[in-house]
Length: 291
Image (cartoon, rainbow, N blue to C red; front, side, top):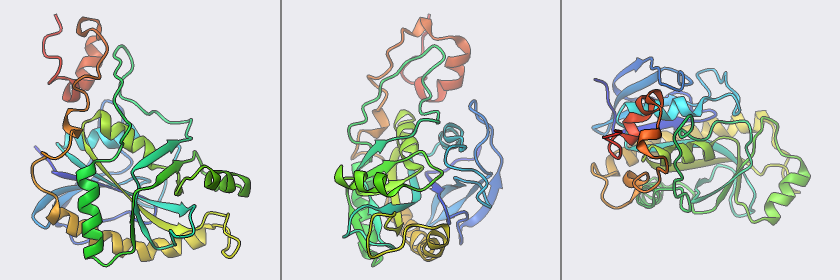
């Protein structure tokens, strides 16, 4: 049985992970369909990892087309407990510059075309999502990024737009007035689904541009994003290697592993058999006897 301790989802410009020992790929199917791409398994710094390209190799999937549920559920099937999500973002603050790394701690969800929960078709759960990022992983990432010499900011709000178009100037200025730090298109759904799967979630947001609000910088273009992404890819790989070595093997300093303990609302006997079977990997430890 294949397994991994740490899952890594690579975003725009980060489609492959170099230097993984014992590297091999597998195709997976989940109750929610197939992930974006085959999953690369192997070891980094002695830790077993699973790497998945969010948009598919070659960037085939737009943010709205990604099967987030399949991507995240595949990680759970591989027994992943820590999930690192890498994304490219625009900065909404002067002090957060292109090429900087941000470890956000909050999200605002402006998406409307995506499946955002595993709990439907006869079962309801309401997870706590006040603090969407694992505090232990955030602290470790902050320390590791400083160790790597990266320009890093800890904290801030990531505004998740639907896309695939970039912002208008009016939207960009409005988001700044609301106090948001970053604008992006992918990460919030992963954070929500990771919490439902009781995974520790760590976002790494690499800044490529100033969106379109900054008077002294060009409005964001694909060419600009791609150029900075290639530079950031090396920083991302360097940081991942440090994180793999620094993340402790056992989860003791956070409550992520018990996120569903008091969240499932549905009477067990009312859960349809097929729904229970599909979700047994996450609800089975709380609902063993349905009779």
